[in-house]
Structures are given as structure tokens and as C-alpha cells.
Length: 223
Image (cartoon, rainbow, N blue to C red; front, side):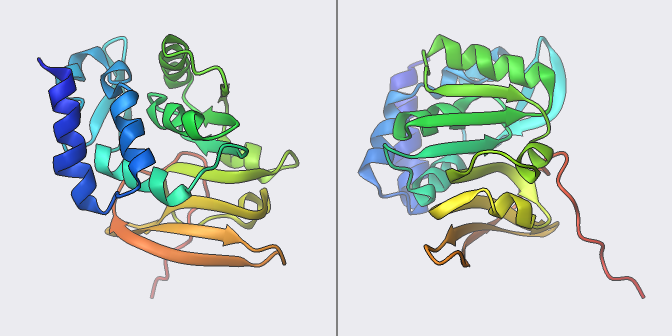
């Protein structure tokens, strides 16, 4: 398989038409080899416009990689800058953390599934992502308590809502990217903390992805 041609086609035929027009992001998607993060059984499908199952040692984890255009759009909307610190919840394969690492000063990525944490860490080590740290644990709990604040928070999975303790970990001027809602209606959102401490939410687009483990769910109204 011609991976370079497939990668170019992914960018030009899937990602650019999906309103990903930041040339730095497009160039990064060419440089970071997505196939290095895909489970071996799906390597030839690394550039297809679909989620890919995350299997480790032949066993399903129940999780999946985002479709490439979704990863690219979230990366663009986060607008990470070179001096910024980032935390991601949901390491998965490590691919999004690798992309973030190319744009940020430091990235911490949290994965609740130990097997996936090891898989993601191994992938990141192979590409020498020295400014990315993988932490095994419950991202909702770790961000819900005391700890450092960040310039960017990326939730790589859906949540029913974004808990206030998570938002409080944003620095002034910081941004949070999350996919929020309940099936069948979910919306990618960008939440910005102003210098005055208020939170401004912008809806980006509708999509649907798997839930992040550990985050609370709003109770639905029942008659």
C-alpha cells in the first residue's frame, strides 16, 4: 500500500472539504504518520473516513479512534499555541496526543483503560513525543480535584455535560474542546474562559462518538 498517497488523499478528499483550512494543521497531518498509531489489524484502513476499533493484543477494548476528519477539525478549533499546556482525556491510540504535542509546550494525556494507556504510550515513544506524558487514571476524577490549570483541555470522547470542576481547571484565555450531549444529538463545542473568568460556549458542529468513562450523566426527565 502507498501510505504517502493514501495520507495525501485523506487530507485533500476528507479533511480539507470538512472546513479544515489551517495550513499548519494540514501540514501536521501529513507529517505525523497516522498508520503508526492504528492497531496492526487495521493499518491498511488508517486513512478511511470512519472510526477504527482499538484492539490491544488482539482483544477489543470497546473503544475506537475518531475518524480522521473529526480529529483534524477538533485540533484546528482548539487553536493550540507553542507556549501552551494541554491536557487530554482519552488517550486511546495516542494519535491526538501526538498531534497536540507538535503544537503545544507540554501535553498530559489521561487514559482510564490500562491496556490502552500502555498502547498509547508505546506509540508515542516510537515517534519520540518527548513532551507528551501518559497518565493512567480516571480523567474525570483527576480533573475534578485540586491540581494544575491548563491552557487547553481536550475531551477525546463525548460527555453528557462538562462538569464545572473541569472548566475551573482552564487558565484565563484557555479553551476546552468537547463533544457534548446524549444520543442521538451531540454537538462539538468550544468553551473559552475569558480573562474575567466567565465561560463562553460556541457550538461547532453535530456529531456522535462514544462516551468517556467516568464522567457524570444528566438524569433524563421522566413522566
